[in-house]
Length: 496
Image 1 (cartoon, one colour):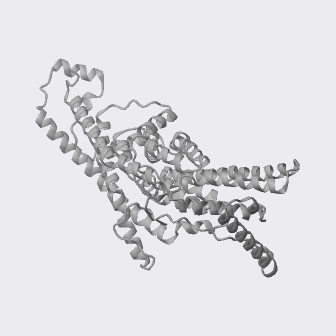
Image 2 (cartoon, one colour; image 1 turned 120 degrees about the vertical axis):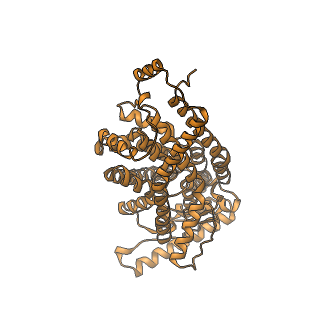
């Protein structure tokens, strides 16, 4: 029988415990919750950085009240995932400590292994932080541990399905590629540049020496196992072994919780303070500049949001008219990292690694923002090229206007098809037409619209544009001339 030693029996018991914890969490919490969010789409209730609301947060409240209530709502939203993270992370520590580590010297292969471990977990980056602690303290390679941390909230199959279902295709593809670059390239390179594995091993030995566990060194080599089989020592009774394993597991829970829980609560308060001080809906008023994108990326990387909030929130912001670059930056930076793992890595592993990962997320976020904005700009330019091409082929003005309007409506439908009810879809279509009018600077699009409501709306916005431009030209100095059109927001139940 393969369970010939106490060490093997301990490994078997802890593995059963991990499977039980994971199955219970996935079946009772994670899969039902993510499935419900996928079905609701952007109709999912979002309040600041939380899904669940214990205390409604009103604008009439003082700043301290709003921060307090938002922190409580955030903690309630995350308590199930955080409980799973603590229990599973402690089990990882117990298991990894008993198994000799034979990791590859290839840092990229180790990162791939960590990614494959993290993707099925299905917890946010905050809830996977205790799991990261358990794996790292147990002796796993650091690049594997950090890849597990960031792949859990971003590469879960349900979250990926939501991304490709309710976001424009270029957004979903850009985020997926950027996440893969981060976990498979940036993480191992950061570890190689700033940390030596000998330092990691020394730190792990120091941390583990502070815990009281039975000596398992006799089971770390084949020769030692053979010697033990020859001696044939008396095996521990099963009940006593169960009791000893449970005691060690409880010690591991305390070992992780005493670090994770205080930082978790602090992260919730800090995130609530940021979101209540700098509401995300105000970011779209920033000018399109590199410093603006860096600011948006900084906020997105800092906020400790629950899993899937990035996808749902950005869908709402896109429909409300947020500029493409800003929306893409938030989509990548929200969820893949946050202030919580930053503080834990800063304290327990390396300040340089914590800063490098935080900076890497910001850099990739700004890069993907520019890339998707460039792509959509090229797409818009192709619409104008088709319009000019139609004129060159001597088509009548009426035909050109009708074809242009049809093409614009098809583009709007592609952007807004996932919205329900129909009122939200119409608002989204109006916003798309408004942006096209603003981009073209005239009312040529309006003549081809067949819907009376859309045509009247189009002419009203075009007239408003002309009036605004005339007023700016006559009354405003040249260095501040800028046409600004109001953008209506969909009636989704969200507060940022």
